[in-house]
Image (cartoon, rainbow, N blue to C red; front, side, top):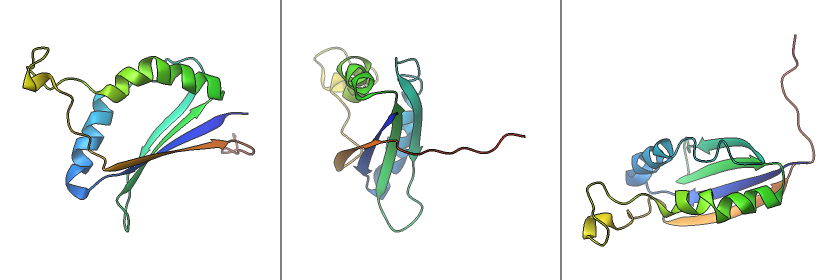
Length: 116
């Protein structure tokens, strides 16, 4: 069965909009990856400053292949707008999250809505 990767991000309230914009700007970077099945960015509603980034993959190998290729580029972030290589403006933007932990799960049961 599939595996799930959940990136647990601690994001201060003043960085929430920044984080969400960065994910919106990267939309589609994982969608065409071999073995990719699902993505969700989960915003906390109350009582926590923890975002969850949920991805589902056909197998661990598919996730590792993405991480060593397109995932590496996506996590590096784009240079700041208007920055020439080597200039202060070309440096990576400061991370929006103050902490990150990656959880891995195997899908052992699943259900969806009944059709019809």
